[in-house]
Image (cartoon, rainbow, N blue to C red):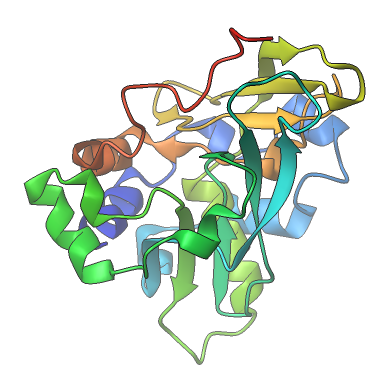
Length: 238
C-alpha cells in the first residue's frame, strides 16, 4: 500500500492525455467526467495530493457479465465486474473484469482481505498472500476537505486516466450467449492497462469502465503476479 501510494503520486499523471479529455472521451460525454472535474485535474499540484491514499482492495460485490452456461463448454466459467456504491471519502477504480472457474460469485469463497499480508507480498513475491479480486481504492485522509468526492474524481483523472479507446481481441459467437473481449488502449507510454473487459455485444465498453495505471505503479505490483501463467478456461471444446 505504501509503495502504491508513493508510485502513484510520484508519477503525477505525467501525460497531457491524463490532464485533458481525448476526442473519444468528449464524444462519449455521458461516460466522461464533467468539465469542472477535468479542470480540477489539470491544475492539481503535488501539494494538492496530500491526504490521498491509494490501496488495492476487493470490491464490495461483483456483478455477473457472462457465463458459459448454455454453451457446449466442458468446463463452466464466468466473467464478473466490480460493483457497489462508494462512500463520499472513497472512490473505487476498476482495472478490468474478473474470470472465475464455475458460475458462483468468486467473492463468496475468497479469503478475507489481509492488507498486512499484501504489504509483505511486495518482498516475498507470494501471490497466495493476496486476493486476485482487487480494485484500486482512492481515499481521502483529510475529513475536513470540502467536496471530497470531487477532489477524488480529479485525482483519479490525473493519476489513473481512462483508456483512449478499446481494441477487440476476442469474440466467442454463441448466439444470445456470445461474448466479446476488449483490451484498453492506454493514453500514452507512461500508463498501462492491466486487465481486459468483456461485453455481450460488439459495442465497445464505456471508456471509464476501466482505468489505466502509471507504469511506476506497475513496477510496484509486479512481484504479486496476480495473473496466473495458465489460462482459467479455453474454448477449444466449442
